[in-house]
Length: 219
Image 1 (cartoon, rainbow, N blue to C red):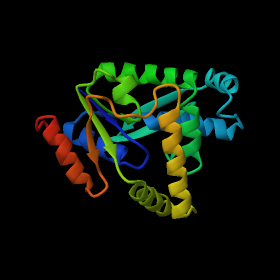
Image 2 (image 1 turned 60 degrees about the vertical axis):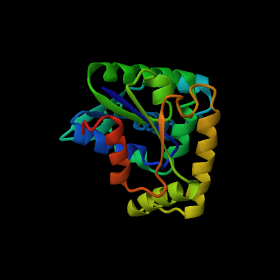
Image 3 (image 1 turned 120 degrees about the vertical axis):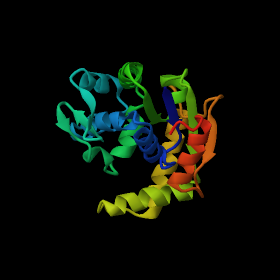
């Protein structure tokens, strides 16, 4: 069984995907974390994420691995655990920009498809149902207002001790929405056969209940 959950930043994709995977007892693969890892490497090495030649050269010596350790997903970049670092605010735009570079997307998508072919999986991202797993049995498109998504991300960042303002977070989200939906390769969009759920006024459990009903009460 393959469950594809797509949507813009801050819509609740990762939270819902993790909850579903736990309840179903299947693998959760955070695809966005893989792009964040590559974006982090670009930042730390001073690589221009819009320079495809430079990115490809960096990618040739880059390894990204995703492992489940005691029920918690960890992301490894060149053998180093970067699970915490990839969630820093500075990595978000780099991840969005570098995900638009064809060589990066093809490498990450090949890995994602390989993992999904081996086991029942929940994947979340921006193009899972349209590009990565177009034949997934269940496709969900989560969305929410920009104001609500910014509030969620702001609270998350503040809880981690990062300095930011609600206005800057909202601005970053709007920019990322534009970048993700206008990129040439596999842009953010709702798959024709996906079920859209607006999470603005819903709790995590309420969203999970809606998806549970959709997949026939298997949770």
